[in-house]
Length: 285
Length: 333
Image 1 (tube, rainbow over the protein chains, first blue to last red):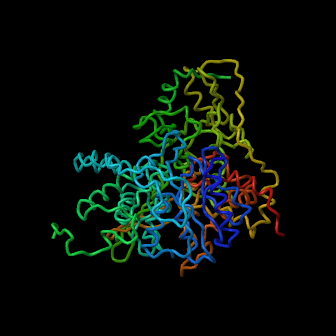
Image 2: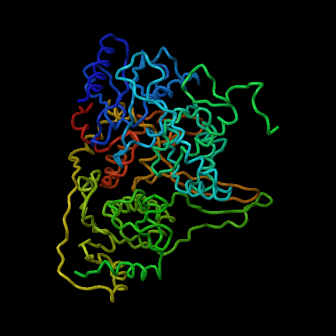
């Protein structure tokens, strides 16, 4: 057992014993060694299920939306990505800060179960240390800006419009519309997704190139300035769509238009599209 | 048993492709699935199981049912779309063969025959290749299957290294094998036996589940589910669909497309009531359907143990772990 696993269990236990939390969300071992899915811990005795290893890939913060009016505090283990997700949910008034107790864990990166290498989303992570927490366990890890995370976008931008269309059309031909990307995404926190507004009929149900692209592009635009780059959409996509290329293209454009912005890092700074400023560029007018 | 040398495989498939569409395991654009022979992609006969099941061949993701034009409030040009080519699914695994048997039960038996399914099924010949190895997530033998062969396939083939053993099991299979007359040899064949490493004990599971609708297990087990449709869309036996229309001007068409019981709006009724309001009810429905309801109605599991959902669920909601945990859960009568 790693030191951090022991610390996790100890911390969670203490929270239960003090009556601080009603339950805790962390990770536990799945059936296979390369699986460490999210776990819901409901008692001090249960805390020994908690685990911290290189396969804790899934995000924890989105689960807060399942319980917006908890009977007490929810203990939530947060890495950098999860903490940014918490900030996003707070900024969108989806959750209340006093309803969560955040246990921060600096994260050196998880492994991709298929390759055994560092997971793509972790290679591209700029904030491995939690940006908000009530207590921190473990030592902080080095951080960097990782401008190379935009390499794929820079390459794509060199393509002609027709080539770009062909590239994305081919990708979305694969989409099975399982909506795993949407459901894993902490920025996708609409009470009712436009996809599910069946009476209005924004989104047709047929699986074809047109409908699939309508979904993919609409989602990308919806979350553009709120994407925390956790990479969960790309990780959970069973069809392997390079969804972060789409998100990063929008992030890059927004950075160029409105100045650098990283969603969920500072809860006091509003997303560029959620804010009107007299200095906003208006070349298109 | 008749034998087919592996270096004659392409020729054998080519012969079939002269007369019908042949679907083979391929990697297309990074996705492992059954795709038409000759289409863009790479052949993948080594895949233990394709990521996408072959159900699309009988039950397309989106299927146009009929189209119409309207003039002066009258329907004109009503056209039913139920065409379909002769098809061969070549190289499907025993688990996927069993999934076709399950869908046959649903679409062809008990009071209603689905003409769209039947048309495709009547024109389908299945060539099953038995597994010689299993993935860590495979558990078909716990679901009562034999990973080496399936008796319902029209043709059963066995992978024997440099060649395949070939056995026609139905009349359609005899006809298909007859086309290979000049390619086949004859040889002594020992059918390779293989077993899954992942085991679950299904003894008494459907009976126990019949009394567990109100159990606590559903809430606990469903908590981490993110409510996406991955498990249902990569499942070879999930057959739920929705029917809708697409209109443009004075013409349109009615289509059906896959739907998923994992989606929030799946059970939403006219007026807005939703009898399955949360993940708990949805997971319960899915697992009961797989392991209990289908047994009750058709005498078999609706889970074939292919392991796709076990491998692909983004948060490892694992039906095999569920079956394991079930043992320890008391029944509330």
